[in-house]
Length: 142
Image 1 (cartoon, rainbow, N blue to C red):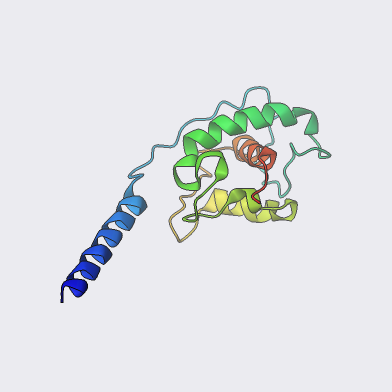
Image 2: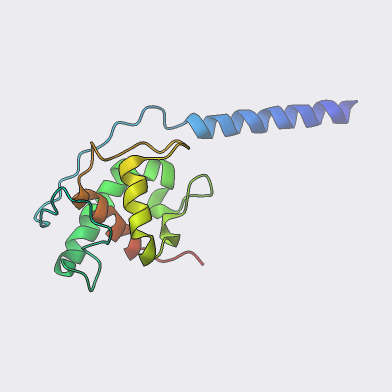
């Protein structure tokens, strides 16, 4: 009987803790992103990261990493973790590969039915691709 009560208390505590994690961020206010001197990418949605080395605007790679780091910290880290180390509750963005660019831009712009908001009214392509460039600069998980 005592073991059953102890198990119930432990399960209840675990469920409360999980609920706290899920609702911890509350209403997040999107943070504006100053994209500095990055070239304006326009309204047509690109399906490849233009700031990646070897792509059209790769000379802006280092600048995009810096801008992306700040933008990520203000808008993404609350759910996806500091330096994109999610801890398992959200996708580990460091695991995305180059061919995932189209998937990435679609998810960020349109959000998901699992809780990620749409960012297309908050972040322009420059900011979104700068975030991607920053995440790509991080070491891959082992």
